[in-house]
Length: 133
Image (cartoon, rainbow, N blue to C red):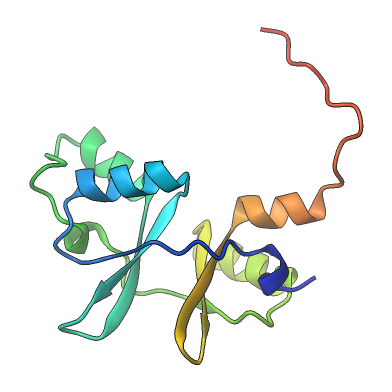
């Protein structure tokens, strides 16, 4: 199976001056765990994840003043839609991250996460197990 079969095509793109609160609101509203950060001044793409925001807030930083640019990963590994899921999983394992921006010739076309890969590799349960709390 290929990355294009597993990736989410809902790509949230934000600017480097978005605050962490703005990024969190947009990500939460779309129920996604990462956003592409596009900096028009550098023509570069980066990624900010829910973990980046959590780490910033957990360390006492103010989500209303901290900007995405400060917490963006810019040393990004990009995936191609034609990568296999094994290639994507290997890149994530090697790099220690959970999301890959998927690029084609025109730019970002999706994001693939560890959860997307697991969903594809795990057969759907016919009789879900109830969790006892």
